[in-house]
Amino acid sequence: MECIASERLWNRNYIRVMASNFLLFFSFYLLTPLLPLYLDEEFAADKAMIGYVLSGYIIAALVIRPFSGYVVDAFDRKRVLVTCFFFFFILFTGYLGAGTMLMFGIVRTLHGLPFGAATVANSTVAIDVVPSSRRNEGVGYYGLSNNLAMAFAPTVAIWIYSATGSFAVLFWISLFVAFLGFVCASGVKLAVREKVVRDRHLSLDRFFLARGWLMALNILLFAMCWGVMANYVAIYAKEVMGITEGTGTFFMLLSCGLFASRMVGVKSLARGRLTQNALQGAMISAVGYTLFALSPTVWAFYGAAVLIGLGNGRMYPAFLNMFICVARNDQRGTANSSILTSWDLGMGLGMLAGGVLTEYCGYDWAFGFTAASQIAGTILIAVATRRFFMKKKLHD
Image 1 (cartoon, one colour):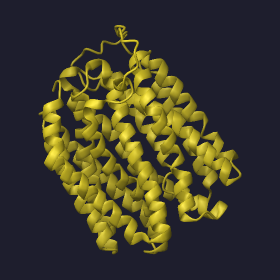
Image 2 (cartoon, one colour):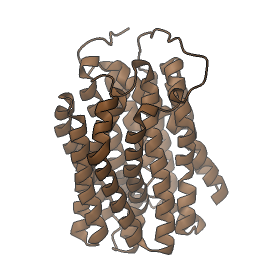
Image 3 (cartoon, helix red, strand yellow):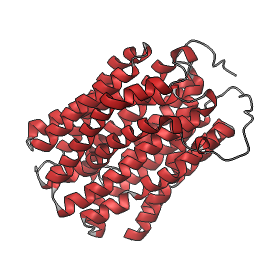
């Protein structure tokens, strides 16, 4: 078995975990930008109904993630990861067989369960295989895998759909990519952990990191923005701006911003500048969302993508490290599940709000809502979250 105590960051297990995480998110987000169009074309669903159906997986992930953190901390992490990844992979077949809106909604909701559990398990395993002296840096790079997948996958999906005109092709490709992720996760090797003796009484900290509640609220505000943007930008571009294939360019520019920000910001994270990175990233994203909301032009459409990518690429890994710093070493799974639960809840609320606002008030209100939520989160960091973190953190 490979020694995970080595100071080498890019060890074989770390690369496998990075690859499995990338493939997990890539397979899932291949479908995200085009599902509103699919539901509209296949089932003639209105925008509010689209919001309800697509938020099902977020609700399922939200329900499972607190329990996932406890399971990952209490049981064999490799076995938990592989089991969750298998069910995540196999459920892609459900999209191919869903012939009604009800069946599609059920499959989408069920898919959120292994997705939520697998993301918690994978990110916790990533922390295990990173040398403790390089944890901030390792977590920063690890986040590139899912951020880049979330940005590149929609670009690839839109290109594939433009070339084939077939949603079934996308479903099959997602299934295959998820299988490759399952293979990568199965190859990870972990050292045997000492069994943690736990209090038999149930407590909130087994399922949610109560010490990080204010940071969780902050993440929720940011996730609401992404819930609206990721799910409605493609249909907005088509209906309002007359852009079809250009939506792929939007996500490509977003991914470039994410990548550039991560590569620069990881050095700052390695020096422990967590709150500074979080605030700077939130401010940059706030400018991007505001530009998108107030200026419905092509240059603002693409410029906002770059700014949102730059901001999120700096902000999210800083918050992930902050959650880890306020948790005990035996609460790594709980710390991961807590930030992801907050993100899920915000995404779900954003999807629902976006669906209702676009249907009854218009896109201006929906994207104005994203700008307001991002600005509120930025102010919260500046006036409260920074001091809260410094008071609550247990280690660097």
